[in-house]
Image (cartoon, rainbow, N blue to C red):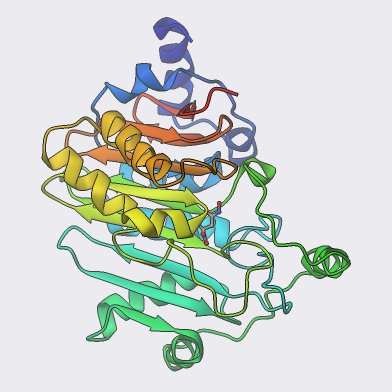
Length: 328
Ligand code: SD4
């Protein structure tokens, strides 16, 4: 998209006159190269086309809120969306029919909290934040996480929607575990934000791979894998087959590459290439990384075409098509 058109769209957003439904259908694209090199803060960026989530984060940022509140409230929009079958309430279950949620959050001071394979609680990101703020620990898993959530006042919620249940029953006819690339064009939400003070935070939340083994945990709640923030450098977050991200500690790697001087775009590309290097004979899976540096420059890269990421700044609310390692 030409810069002039980009600015015209942006001004509509900057004037604050876009309603939520409009945001959801806002699909104007620009190339990632155009936006990546424009460093601007405050900024919110997230994996996939979760426009309602970035809109919520932007509302927090533009009112002077912290990046921590922005990412927390932003990703919660998706956790609460019952139509989203990959995050929070309404997420696809494991192979036994249980919805188990993973989430983590990290702030400007390197504080972090995570919950792993937690059932019956609709907002794992809020529990992860409580783990960070109210306990001496970083991760709580399974029953312990659930028990902690109740102690903190969270309500027990049945997370398996009728639609998810029907899909699971149908899946049981074959019981084949085969993650689908770019499932429904949206997936785990990882979000990074920089507030007006220049402080960076991140959050990541997911129901994990559909029909996974009971107890399976991916990269999303693992600090350094699904998410990493260093307020001196930047942040990164991931979506896709978590096992592959964990093997290269993907998000930490990307932040370290930025520390060594790479741009967010270059760092994401290197992150994907490290995964490709470990999978010479197998490329039938998707990974998408996004990153941001201290200046507010952004980057995104993936294995297969189809991954996009949202950015929201004073200059616009954009769904950026990510460049990919494989071209078709
Ligand atoms: C996981 N990374 O559990 C998550 C799921 C995901 O695209 O992002 N799928 O491995």
